[in-house]
Image 1 (cartoon, rainbow, N blue to C red):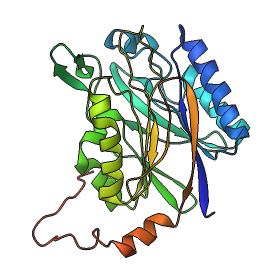
Image 2: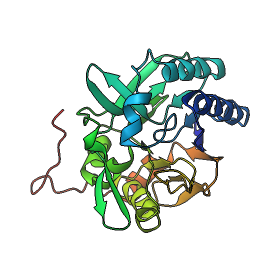
Image 3: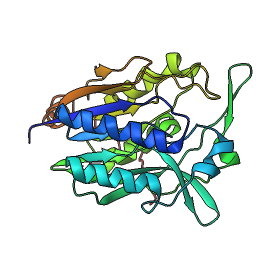
Length: 276
């Protein structure tokens, strides 16, 4: 396998959880028909992005309704499916969780959002995930052939150290299901995706919900995939759509040889290390 076709599925919100799941499954099947082997859904795709809605739509992973449906369609289509995120319930705690299902429908891993979205820009955007959610404390990776992939969620990509830790683990790709707001989106969305890719010489995918101006929280849209040079390979618009990129799996190793910054780090003077 020298290339991998990746599909970024930007979904609009539907009135009910069941409708959101049905819409996602339809788009996953269509992406498979166009040759995608890795399919990625957006953050909080099965429910409104709202602290008031998280508990009502939360479920156990992998036994809940959304998980069962995603596992089934992954097995049906034989793809690697990154299930965006949806609220996970474990005991009395709620998490914003990204599950990954393999081509046999198996749960490969799950990642719980580590840095919660607490923001206060007066008159622009105020949101406090920590009012309803618990922060995760574990990194999560999976592999497709020789490609090792790390997971983060939205706000996590603002923390350069996290992506750098995944690079230390040997990841050549990062996936961030993300629902950026429409104020910071135009300012930081492309910049953060391209910067994380360039700094770590890896592919970076950011997958957003489609924009809905009538929603309580309006997502930015513009899902994108950046290559290790910091170039955008594909980008969605604001509406529901799926965009594709065929990524060259040799590129990361070639760039590491051509621009050897990763092995030139002065570990005698500074060092970054994951604690878990």
